[in-house]
View 1 (cartoon, rainbow, N blue to C red):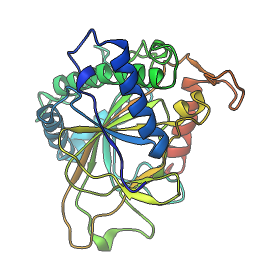
View 2 (cartoon, rainbow, N blue to C red):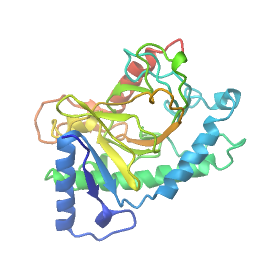
View 3 (cartoon, rainbow, N blue to C red):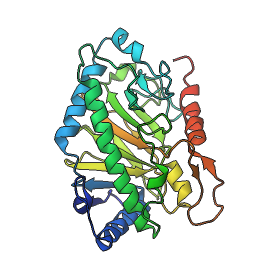
View 4 (cartoon, rainbow, N blue to C red):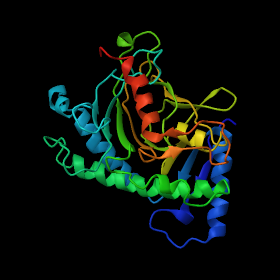
Length: 314
């Protein structure tokens, strides 16, 4: 397969209810075929439009362009929620064998009223981020329901393990990602914008700007481009879903390459990482023992340790 399939989600887009089971079943089969082919699928007509994405990217960029001293008080690690907050350049190595990734991030992991948020110069930051988080939550639950039907399972088998998204008992995270201009002379050997990795949870929803670089590794081991397609969200399988489905759905490795020499463009993306509730025990839904049971939060924290421990001194 040399491209990622596009599936029309119009019949179950946000705001549409009372869809008949037969239509949902057919949609589930389309999505299953896409995921078993490459592990990624573009969904169009989801109900989340490009204006919502553009607005969220714009306020995110305003934050990333603030002086570092304005961002530091909101750093990841300064919140009770382990993954909430700002991540500076080169702090993460999603492929620990490479130097730190050439990106910044801001993670939203909780909608708790008690959290501190940036306000100076980005007055609408919290409102916009939380609003987009809620929209992504609504969409991911619909996708999870359709995925279950495509596997011949009860429609709520995945959804019921994601009841606490937005609370402190669920690790689902909206990440605003900012890849600044790259100066070739400053790049370390083997450094790229985001190292090869698979995602940790159930599925991920990816909204990207029109600057390229995202690549996905197919079942044949070859990387293919995952370009920006207007009006779509790119969805991929993550590690816990692979375990859950006994490898029917496979968590695809992906990366973000450096721009071509002389290209000074900035890349942005918004990624909603969908994680089962912290105390959810993920077991193979076919009843097999292909993977041992694992608690959602334990798997997530283990992967964070791999990502950040390699950059202890960054």
